[in-house]
Length: 126
Image 1 (tube, rainbow, N blue to C red):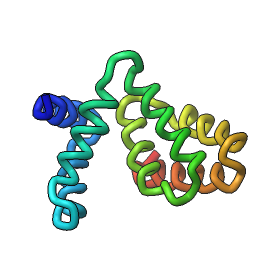
Image 2: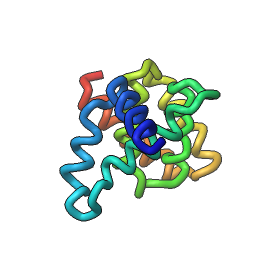
Image 3: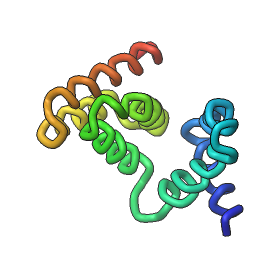
Image 4: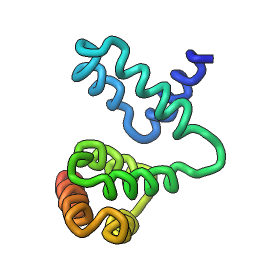
């Protein structure tokens, strides 16, 4: 069963962020062996690939949660904004979700998240 979830996670990542496991492995596997596989298996093979929500909704929800948590989540927010754009979430939808979170995470969290989004949009040439 564990192998199945890892395979599902890898298949899932191929559609939204094919380099992520490699990047995570290069950065963290020396410190925590098999970190990248564990993350891919759990997040993408067990949670993101579940039935019940489409990927756009999952990524919008993730962007909202990361925004409300504040600036310390900026690296993860950056990844999820890129992934959301890769699956068809629009810049406007991303910005509106971030703005909505000003009610729950506060204005500073919303502003920091908008700055992260602006940076991602600029990197991608949008």
